[in-house]
Amino acid sequence: MEKTKSASKSEQDKSKKATTKLVRYSIQAGSFSKKENAQALVDKLRKQGLAATLSTKGSLFRVKIGPELDKKKAADIKAKLDKQNISSLVTSE
Image (cartoon, rainbow, N blue to C red; front, side, top):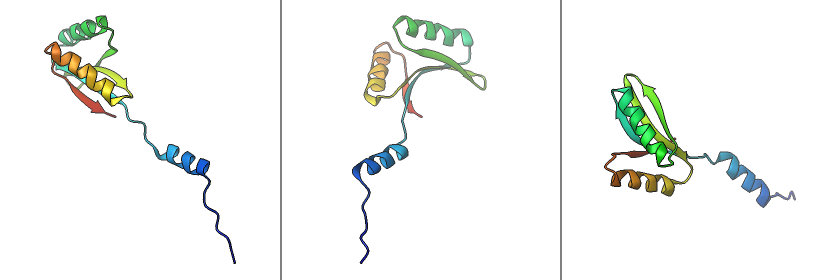
């Protein structure tokens, strides 16, 4: 009779870690046709201690904050922006 060995707990944990994908959240705080407007928002957000960046996609200039690893923290940043009448959305990568 052949005995089968089950995987040890540490082997199972390693397998789970290897297949778990790290999700990062970013907050898009604006999309502008003029770079000056996007840069003004980046400057405003950085003065508030937020990690705002400017990126270009086609003819648009996007203002993003993050990435954040915690979804709740990203949602809290979005709520802070909403209170300032800055329309934003949370995206995941």
